[in-house]
Amino acid sequence: MSEALQSLLDLLDLERIEENIFRGRSRSAVVPRVFGGQVAAQALVAAGRTVPEDRLAHSLHAYFLRIGDPGAPIVYSVDRIRDGRSFTTRRVVAVQHGQPIFHLSASFQVYEEGMEHQAPMPSAPDPETLPTTAEQLPLYADVFTDPDVVERILEARESVDLRYVDPPPYATVGEAREPRSQVWFRTNGKLADDPLLHVVLATYVSDMTLLDSILLAHGRGGWVTGDVVGASLDHAMWFHRPFRADEWLLYDQESPSASGGRGLGQARIYTQDGRLAISVIQEGVVRVPR
Image (cartoon, rainbow, N blue to C red; front, side, top):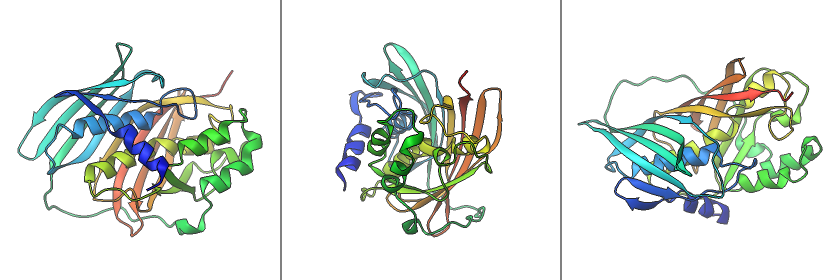
């Protein structure tokens, strides 16, 4: 396991303060605020630690309410909404400086057999043939407004091997493209055989690139190039089938709409052998600076 991945796992390993209250550490993201994927992943950890091990996470719905302060801890309070025969529901509120910054509802289910069908996996090249972030990102350093942003992105993504199928938004600034984006990702190291851990890591990564397709439709490079400002508003995920976050996953993303200063991203995540593992939808603020 890489040192960066172990550091991420330590970040997601919350301290239990009371039976339903947990405390997590924070760290800066590429921009000077807490990365949304970190808060969502930590909240799911808090919820999962109040649920029997035989109940697997099958969905989450979350709202980002305020910008997180990377210099302060986050307290997660879990409300045990329901414990049914098949389903368990939890609500989590994340608090900093006495104010809620995020809340999440998550549902867990005992495994059962059922009807099976899925959307087919789209075509994509072998991830091993694609450049890594460390190989690709420095080639476009001249488009970033902050000369230190390359180093910060590489540090933020050091725990995850994330590879774009087509050039990312910052590589084609000024060129409007189809609002679709694909990336392959996996953790930089093996994980324990804990289903919740793999769901939590996929949740963490899911917030990294989902709004890219919105930017592509308008030829914008994104927050790192300074031609767009934005933030995540809400985030929903459905976990359909077992998967491992330490094995290649294809994140197939598109944007069906942008209007009113907001943009919508939706995606499907497939295992390398073609199983539909996760569906994701996110809306974010996307504004052109005045």
